[in-house]
Length: 138
Image (cartoon, rainbow, N blue to C red):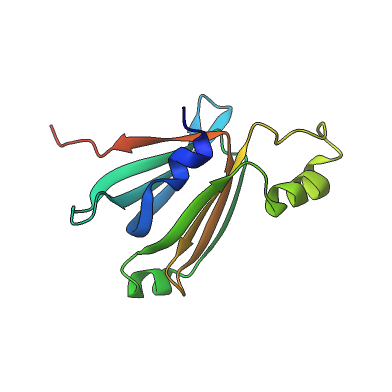
């Protein structure tokens, strides 16, 4: 069985497109980050509209140059998911040490999305992700 990191990292991110992002409150106590993307499939296949839902998101850091994103056709350079990163260690030390146990982020992942320069980047700390196909118009 693949890990969350493997499943996310195995998606074909390069030259996929980030169309929009939303933060959605679920049941008044959880936040999700919804990324509307067009994901590359197999070589030669067209882009498939999908929503990447980053579940139980607890931190989001966003540095996106909207003009740069437009100029580069919303293209994603790369994306990755890791269970332990320097950013997670920094958050644990600087923001969570006083309020939570030392392992407050142990069940979380760092999801990073890098746009084609100068588009910027998006970093989300969340417990997992899921893919939702674009809903057809009924």
